[in-house]
Image (tube, rainbow, N blue to C red; front, side):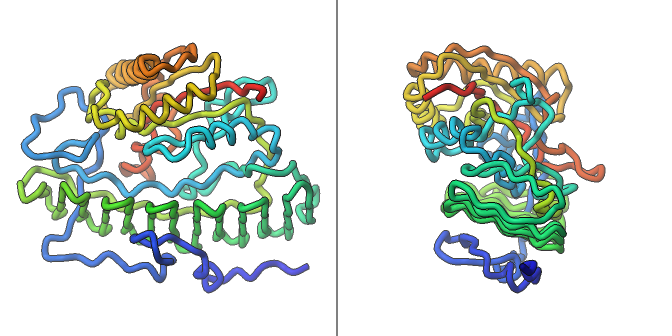
Length: 404
């Protein structure tokens, strides 16, 4: 057998849903952000100040006036659970929940005793490139000498012993070139990573392009976030247009407000090598709710426009009929630990109360973890990491695995 060719040219054929959700692009082919005379950006997204400023202009939901949300981190799908019996419950939950804005479903990681592991974050294709991989179908493969092939129950794995290899299971296809670059495609989500820190992600009408030079573009529907990598940036959603000039000011629909320059988009790190694949037991499913979808900046009061998402979530949970679970709140590290602890507890309680009012009969325990359990770095190399802090601002619903 021969190792796959590891060329940028091969990666360029990876399908990435374009900003209009109807074309294809790669980090090289995607249109670079073009600056206008009023080229944009936003200040770092401070999570929860203890005394929010009085709004002087409209604001993006969950942010202060003038703040531009960060271009999101590219989050790798989790491929470490290769046993359908372990991941099955999470897959059932994912199918029941469906596509609800701001809600994602992942297997709950557990150690050998069945206890939930609290120190494992989402696998980020960035930073030090470390992480864990999982797939929805198959069985554990251990090659011993680092090379070999395996096929069982629709899963086919080829490992070349130098970090490169391929993995396929149903619609899931993973190619790792062993040099830090690679491709993931499951028919719904596509991810590609180049060796120069560039890459992209797409799912439905949402896409992220990271150019590896501090600039990047995020689009979902009519919403677009552009970071030019030099402190300037742009946000637009058809209702609001926020332009940051990188010199300490921004305009919101033409209204000037103070705004720090945007920090650059961090470069992507290494695509996981095939040799790092390892099984991780699952003991249920975790539903992660983006607090920006549910709450205003610094608030634990659920916004009225979150009703549709919570209605859909409640319907799914009623159908699953899980007897017990937990609702857990988390924040980033901005503001005091005491403030973050209370905010996380209040937000978790608000979600639990709201779901109960919508007919969810699951007996939820409620806990706030404050800033103590980040899933992404709040800072990278001593610099603020708004996209990482955004991932840390979350409410999680943990459902233990049940027998269907």
